[in-house]
Image (cartoon, rainbow, N blue to C red):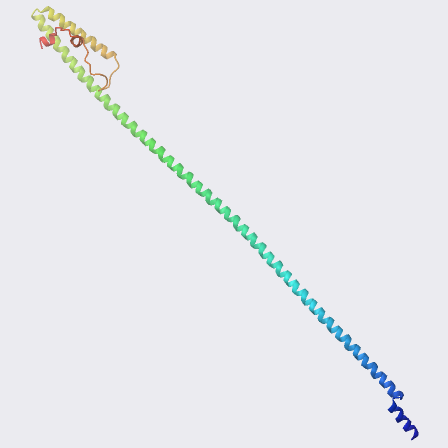
Length: 228
């Protein structure tokens, strides 16, 4: 009984070894638990910070990647725009070259038509000139034929008058008629030696001894008028 009371007293006063060790163990366990909780909390905080840091880095990486993607797109667009601009320039140059080619072709066609017109005009003029020359040649032949007929008629008439004057013994008349006949023949030969004149060319001035004498105011006996 005495020992039991002492143990009870000792337990009540906390002087028992069991209680003392028990309290120490509980205190150590509590401290250990607290340390574990602190470590766990620190680890959790560290994990959260690491997660935040990773998320931040991920976001930054995505932003950088997106920025790079946009830069590539912009660069490609610039290249495409330059390519289109270059293609447009090439197309413009082609169009200008085509326009210049068409302009030169039109000029050549116009010049060719002008040359054709000039050639046609020259041919037409040559035909007209040839036709006119032929007509003038025909007229000249007609004039010469008429002059020849007139000359032969006049020659025959004078010869008839000479024969008639001889039969009548009019020697002066015969001599004058013979002189006139010689003059006509001389004029004829002179005219044959002279270059031919085109119809309508030259003056219409009359020539000849009797006409010349008349133009000077001299009165000459004309047997053709006398015996005409």
